[in-house]
Length: 209
Ligand code: T5A
Image 1 (cartoon, rainbow, N blue to C red):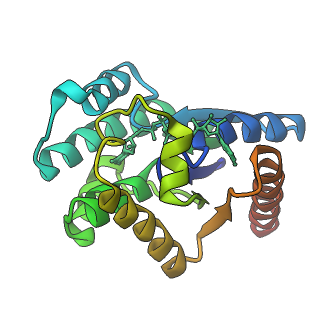
Image 2: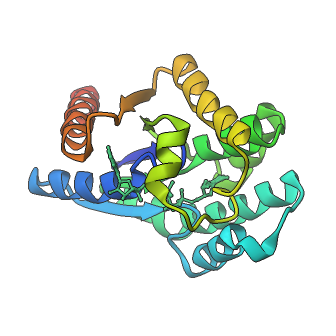
Image 3: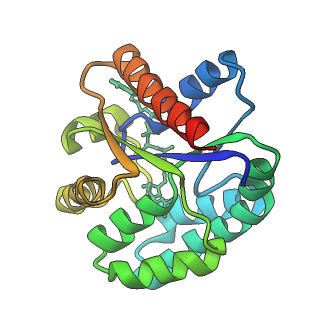
């Protein structure tokens, strides 16, 4: 496919929303065609599923039902937004994708990673990110950044969030296409660090074409 698919991941409050916006601006200034989107979301169905999944009123649901809802949103998102954008040559920046499923439903909820990978493959027709950046933050600091009004996932106990963070770090240690970006230096420093790493990856990709 002509475009480049990059995903921003990380624990709660890592700054994905902030840095998706800032990174999109930097890449647009460099002349890239950029599509910035998020999961769950990015389509009408995805936004409706997001509301359901994040509402405190939804309460506890089985890990598999939760997974299938995230993947229903993803199937629609890939088919209607991400793949068409990549086909036009865009750089697609997605706030959360596959690695959130592995970290939250795998490491957090305890579902086997192999099963999640298989289900994800079916939902995306095999589309994987070209590169993933994990914005890393200490769990307590991230939850503090998010504030007091917490959604259904944010309201999970601290050990859940610690397993999720550990999951992201383990996945990054295993996969060459996953880079960890520490966020402790503040928004401006993190934005600079991330933009530098993304530009390197895009240059390497252009060199391989
Ligand atoms: N999920 C998702 C699954 O369980 N499985 C899946 O497959 C998928 C796709 C989605 C939830 O669903 C789960 C994971 C999530 O629990 P979300 O998209 O994470 O929800 O929800 P948001 O509320 O959009 O995201 P977060 O709450 O995690 O926050 P962000 O986007 O990481 O952080 P952001 O940018 O909103 O920043 C939070 C605050 O921190 C400041 C910002 O200014 C803001 O005030 N900040 C920093 N402060 C200091 N230093 C930095 N480097 C900072 N960067 C940002």
